[in-house]
Length: 450
Image (cartoon, rainbow, N blue to C red; front, side, top):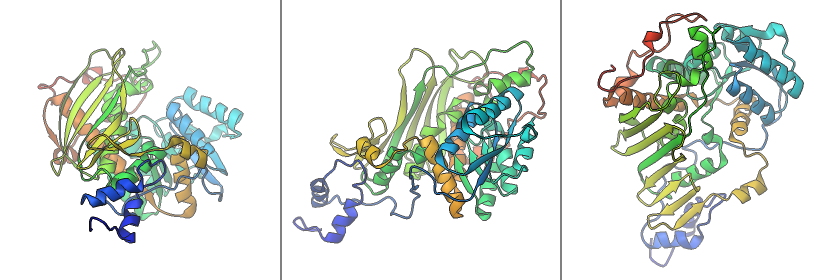
């Protein structure tokens, strides 16, 4: 491109990055072309998924939904679904615990006009089959993550659309089960959405469009964080068996949650993998248990992820009271830096090239809750009859978290090939509300733990 001319086509291509919230002007783009730094897209429009995010899902036929896992996340997810779309009917509930299921049953009846009869409320470890077989079109899978692969497998076999709360695998066997079921879901034209809700959060979607348009250049690295105070836990009650205690306290046990690097920090790892398109090759890291009260997990991790192309991502997560907190992502490129902390893209000198305009978004849309918007997208695909697969991407991000966990637990570098082909299966041999061999659940010691 000459120093004094910019043709109309080049200007329009460059201008595609000026989406909602941009503060970069045409002069900045013209200057970049003048300097020989014209934007080079990482992916062209149509080569990556951009969700339609209207305030509500399109109207259509009645959709019947079943909820598997009636705790806090299952209860929240079904209410988000009811806020996302009209003509949704909750027809079946399933859980291991009667109190959790009964609480949701009463709340849906009292506050949401959804009457689920007692004979459609199923109890026990096999309740997921009864919910799926209760005449539903779609299922919300929100039990502790360990059960997600088997539940998704059964729902897919039966031709049901699935919403799966993240993470969707806590070990290698679960990962492979999810990947196989995702292929089957694609073949059956099913809509599958996962709880990595940043994919449906307006500011992240807009930032990704700028990154794919080339605004930060080629991605060279990143830092991702989820540092917060201690998460909840349940002290054991005298009447609880080992299994009941572990499930009620699930977020603190590795076999149930995957540890917090998988259960929670998967969000941040996923953002980098989503926006970069890179594949993890190795994980080397460490962690420890300092102040956790129950369970067998760590409360901090620091992981160096190396991608197949040699780019490195530093991942940090912590759940300890009294420490500095940070939740977000920074992605570095040859031309600039994206930060979710202030929703900006800056050039390498610190000048703002783009900033998400929250006020403009509020003027255009009423719904900004990504937990609701992910269900808007789910229902839209179902009612339009279009296949949608988020299971594959979320499974890959979940296994990356597992790699980081196992590197910290063992003190070894873990490769993708090693982990994805591993025979690791954390599920207990017997699923029943009784006593267990609690000696099997010990805190890992690097250098000693296999």
